[in-house]
Length: 219
Image (cartoon, rainbow, N blue to C red; front, side):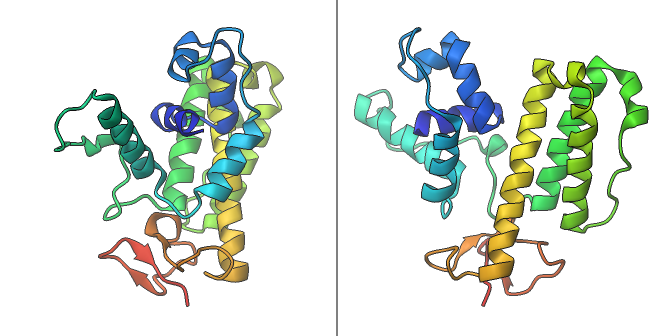
């Protein structure tokens, strides 16, 4: 599972697409230590593992730590001092909010569409200009709906991959918001501490936030 998640993080693709590419991409199969004819896991298993087993963890830092520990065990890395390029990692001191993540991924989808059909711009919904997360979710859902209405365009691999990623991000964001609004910390986090980048701006304010540590406290 960790290797699937590492591929997912490196290539910024959805659970569905990382599993789908693992069916035919020999470089993925090699990394996963699978024979060419070996079948892959069900995408829902990866989703459940990611949401239920890793929901209280910083996924990227966890994967980096796991990778380094394996490399040390195999003798690939000799030094105990590791320098990590943070270009692709999410910093707790400068994280993305859910709103920003949704906007980034809807932008990726629009760019993929325009690269195939520039005239499709006329069919796009108006962007959400507010900082309301629910309005952004509505915009993303409308964007998905309009692109999916063109079955030829939506089935192009480059577009479909970005479409699946946006769908997954919307679902994840809605699930997180539901848990926060219904349960607060209770029933959602074992120690009542969550990475701030999933919670900031959720309610349009800084209720109970600790910006220095990168965590948000809801109580």
